[in-house]
Image (cartoon, rainbow, N blue to C red):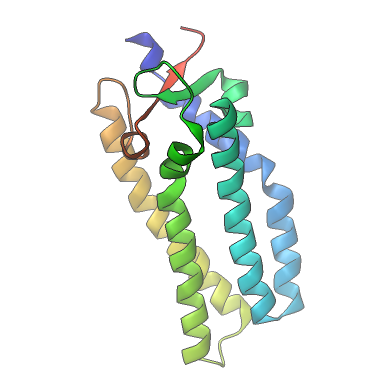
Length: 168
């Protein structure tokens, strides 16, 4: 059905939502310049929480992040009769959040085991881990989304949700 053909709108929505976090990324660069590992670890955790809170709150409350609103798509429960709520919105974003937490744990343990590692090395390891974990996750998501009649990705299946194009 046409209303489930949301791939491009979902992609553009994700890009719009990413743009919103550019100021926070700039702040993260400033945090790195402080050259304090504890502050870096706290910042990485706070940044992960901000990203997840943004998505969980807006999808749970309104069924849309700002990017989804601009693209005129909405996240509904699988029956398409109501919003998904906060619990299911968290299920949608739990995997990336787990990646962030594993990445943070990884750089903390690397820092403990290799005290000579500097902030740049630790941040590079974190970024690399997040990049490759996300890449694998996106491939899995695309495979499920493109082979499912309602275009539900793994995170939609986990959250019992579906994304619907409001203009169709």
